[in-house]
Structure formats: C-alpha cells, structure tokens
Length: 465
Image 1 (tube, rainbow, N blue to C red):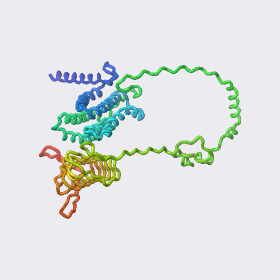
Image 2: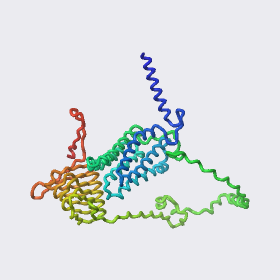
Image 3: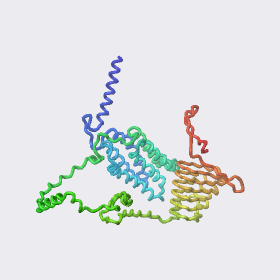
Image 4: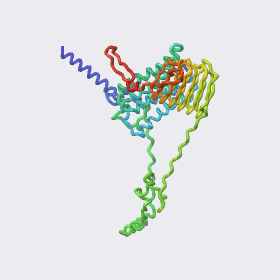
C-alpha cells in the first residue's frame, strides 16, 4: 500500500514537471509562437487582462475626459505587455537597445500624464489624477531588485485620489466608485504577479535571442536583400610610380623622419588642460595657439505660462502667479470651490464661505480664508502657510514639504490628515491676547504586534511626538 502511494506521488510530480517543460519555448515538442506564449506571459494576461478590461469598460461608460484618457492608458498597457513578451523571448540587451525597447512605453506614459496636465479644469480632475499616479506602475520593468515595492509606492500615491473619488461618489454615483476601485484591484493584481514571476526584476530569457532579432508581439521582419556585388575596379595606372616613390622614401634610412612636424606643448594633453577637457585634438590646431574647447550649447529657457485669475463656472482658478501678495477672492458662495496651482511667493485671501480649496504644486505661498464647508487640500507643495479665520472640517496634506497651519478658536475641532509629508507644524491660540502655541505633527511612527488584540498597533515615535 505504501509503495502504491509513493508511486502515485512520483507520477504526479513527473506530470507536473512535464507540464512546465511543455510551456518552455522550443521544448516539449511545441515551438514557441510569435506571441511570446510562455508561462510568464500567460500568467501576466491571466492576472491583469480582466482587471484592465473592467477599468477600460467603466471609463467608456463614464465617458468625457475619463474615456479619452483610458484610450491613452490602453496604449501604455499594450506597450507594457510588449516589453514582458520580449523579455520572455530575449536575453537582457545592452543599455542602448534596452532604451529603444522601452521608448514606446515611456512615450505612452508621458501622453497619459500630459493629458491630465492639459485638463486641470476638468470636472473629472480627481479621476485623471488617479490614473496620472497609477500609470507610473508600468515602470516596474526597469526596477531591480524589488519592483513590487516600486508599484506599492505608486499605489499609495494613486490611493490619495482614489479616496477622493470614493468620498465624492460612493453614494451619489456607485459606477464612478467602482471605477476608482478597479484601478486599486489592477495594481494589487500587478503586485501579486510581480512577486510570483519577477520578484527581483524583469525575468529575461538567459538563453533567448537578441532583442534586435525579435520584436515583441510580431514576427521578425525578413532580412534586407544582399547588396549588389561590387564591380571590379581597374587598377590605377600610376601604381608603379607610387610604389617606386615609397621605396625611395624607405631607403633614406634615419633621414626618413626629417620631414615630420614637431609636436609642440600646446598639442600635448598633459601640457594643455583644454585638450584634456575636450578629449579631442583639433585638426586645425597650429603651433603656439592652444586648442579651444567648443562652448556648450545654450539650453532653451522654459516658457512661462501666463498667470490666471478667474471664475470658471463654480470654480475659482488661480494659476502661475509669481510674487503677487494681493490676490483676493471676495465674491464667493457655498457652491464655489477654489483651485490654486503653481503659484510662487504669493498670498491668496478667500473671503466668505466656499465649498473647498485646493493648493497644488505651490512654493513659498500662503492662503488665508474664512470658512470652508468640506476640505482644504495641499498637494505637492513646498514651504506654504495657511491661516484659518473661521472653521474648516478637514485639512488634507499630501506629498508636501514644509507647512505651517494657524488655527482659530473656531477651528480647534479640525481633522488634519497627512501623508508622505514633512516639516508640518500647527499653531493654536492660547488665550485672548493672540499668543499662539506651535505643535509639530509626527513624521515617524512605530508599529508593534499586540498579542491580546491579535493585530499590529501603530503610534507616533517618542522622538517625534
């Protein structure tokens, strides 16, 4: 009985090994097809295709800018798959060939992000921003040794906007909430796939062909026809005279070097620093004149966009302001929101009561407001300040380095949510004399296992609390 069990176990193992060998290109009696039909590619499609189709179909149902961006995202998804297919059939290429292989993926990612930047006034801006952060996960194919951690980092960035979409549409429009969750499911599936098949980096085929010989997802193009046979040239008529002249020069013996030009110090790299810097000796150098290295080409200055200060429907838009300390938004109501983008060294005052305020990619700027109904948002900012004269339920701080928050007595119940940020301080009033007490927001945390609760507990470290 024991022998029968061991025999059955052995047969199961042999069958498992046979199945795996049959999936390897060129083995198991089945040649690999041009679609990269290997286990790594099959599992990629099994893990991601369904989740991506869900995101893509929901995007088309929502329509508008979300559907347009989804078309660009589809190109990036296909370019990402093409890279994995190539890796399954080819060995790791040299840096130049790898750069050419990754160029379509890089261009597709840039198109997705550029679409968000061109549509900052869209009512689907949070949707576009979630995809803006999510699309970077396809860059894992260049990361080693832990690409899954790279995807997790991008997932955390995308989750900031995912939560904003859920908060806005969880009850009012479940379809858009499902759309936001579909991206989270896709990224989780990608992390699982990477951990299973590419844990230390993209798994190239060590015994595969060169990238130049294989194109991902398509048969290799036929080689070009051979060039026409060269026509035999007639021997030069004066070859005999040239040979005689050469022999005459060689017969001079030691005097053959008398006709050579002397190498002066300005032509020597150890005597002329300019030559060492350029690495090239100019053919036009003359004795007594050191070679001059060419001047580097001047870089084109980045074109500044014109400043914007206007009311667009129900949204106040303040963009590209430089050094303006007197920006005042006074004619407001509870249905309006304020969006401030790329302002440097500015002060913005918002009077009255508005629905929400967002400050994005601003530096050394400050905002003063009376009342906000929902949230005051800071994203990708540096060295900013905010003064709350009235009340605000929530202040959200994301990916911001350096922020000073001044709360009024009416705003003492404000909830402050922070992520991936540093140098955060909150000042609160102590009495009627206007004195303020500054409190630092922790940046470092400790996580420990609690045996009683059977879970992890996280709390601010003592050195930062």
